[in-house]
Length: 105
Length: 240
Image 1 (cartoon, each protein chain N blue to C red):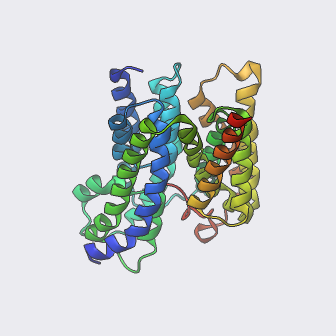
Image 2: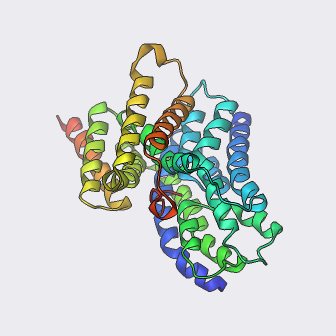
């Protein structure tokens, strides 16, 4: 990607994100009445994060196996109640351990 | 409500943001130099949106239209927050101040502002967003620089940190709210299909994320509409 493309991508991303926040903040007074659209927007953050994580996490490391293991340990750690940073550390240690083992073996 | 109260309330958010955006910096350093990665965080202040943006930039077939549509749908929830926040702010919180401070509307800052007793003043809101903004920007800066310096076995390991945090946001909600579990599983199935079904593999990364999220959220909203504000899917533990 060249610098010009970067600038255009950044402009589009930052511009759209800003307008989504600023325009309703300034203009709109009422609440969204439709239960369907309120529900839809409530689900969006979670479905977006899920779609971005799987299967991308399998390809974020040197081999699919360590990425898949990281996903597994992260889910388990989260089910056991670990917070944001705790779960992230568990995922990192999993990859470090498995990639390290593979280098040795 | 004073500026200093806001700063105090914003401190824990700022610390959390530093950690999340550190991993964004690591992820970004694989594609861009550190000043360019940091600039993304300084101008966007949104983790899911930025990360999708990064994936679109990394995709050789990524287009500006795709970036616009992805940013729109992923960040659409901020419009919802902006609407409800606009009813919570003090009358003195005028148009100019709103235009200037709109960037501060993130899941966590919004949740804290809404939890205050009485109207939110511009002064308090600035205080509330200042440390999260600094934490978010400096976290990316540190992560991007570390990504350039550290050996690849370490950055690979750190690279999954962001995914780990995504898991930490989604899983507790799946556990607490069964319909979210269903919606998330639909999104994952859809996402796997775009990767592994040959007929669908021509779809670019950004559009795949958009379609997965829209389909899953649409089905979720149609089958399991959330009851009302108090019964809403909990967004207070969400990302930036």
